[in-house]
Length: 415
Image 1 (spheres, helix red, strand yellow):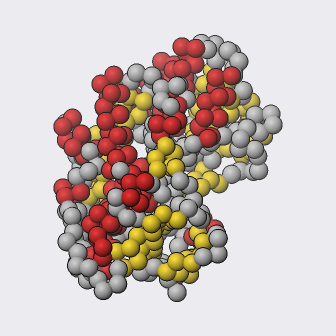
Image 2 (cartoon, one colour):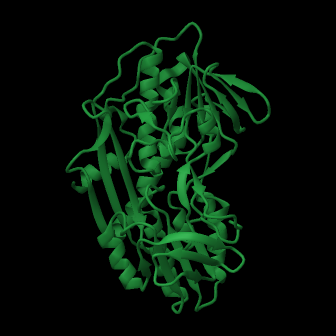
Image 3 (cartoon, one colour):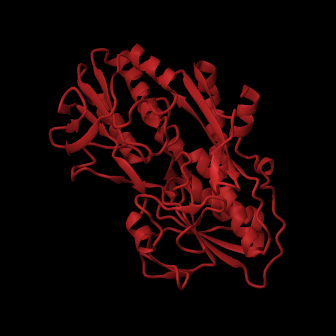
């Protein structure tokens, strides 16, 4: 894949190239009601495009307790002071003002699929014709410990700032130990990117410090050549097939199996637990889960277990990567499918979704990675489109382009 093709796909505002152009919808006598749970890249994009394409034919309510969404994308740059946390805070002003999405700053406490009704944490209720669930991820902790002392910093916001503070104040000869969960987890390159960014900063500011990475996976999951080379350059100690068995937040110790030692104690301990669908208790009670994730009809992202409820983003179980860019793609496919269904129109089966990202490996260089998936009528699944999968080595040019890519994605989702 050449550079021009990569930039085209990562522009994300190219719905018409996927057969998702603006839909001409006749206004219903009473607007259809769609409720969207979760205001991240999946939920916010779905809410926006339902109104952009559906117009007055659909009432859209976004249920998201936060008024500001702190994007995990680029958040590792907070750890080396390359970006301000405030730059990664997104609000819903454009969605509510320009697109007329109703924002409820609440949590959903229960879902009644039979009555098509949800109950909010303030006791109020909402009915829906379609419900979109986009809760992101939650974590499977090995044991109870203080996550303020041992932050995962994997959802953006305060925990990332706390982790940054710990790195800044660690002794000059201290240890930064990070654990990587087994796949699937949010943002496949993210942990390796973090290890590089932290190691680069420590090499320049605390050269006697040590970075140790304990990976539950058999090897580096993506971009092995680029990340592996940087690990060698920065002196990162990397171990694969390591399982976390316990965490002690008071002593900053992680107990493991499969590593050279049975436990590691560090001045900064960054444990990223294994993942599961966000709001898993709520989703399980509604019959949406099978194991840790929510199975769906891949073409429409409608639950394969409960009708008229769609799951998009990290919580769904189609097997595609869990990351912000592809969540934005999924949201558009889902929005179009819902509008077509509500208006009695057929769905276009020839759909594609794209996964793309840039990953900083230092304060001045980044890699890039992209891949396209096409919906297959025969397998009823998203399959890789070859040779669309490609990656680029670390460079200053890619680092500069990273901000254009992220700006496009942020704007397409929230503006």
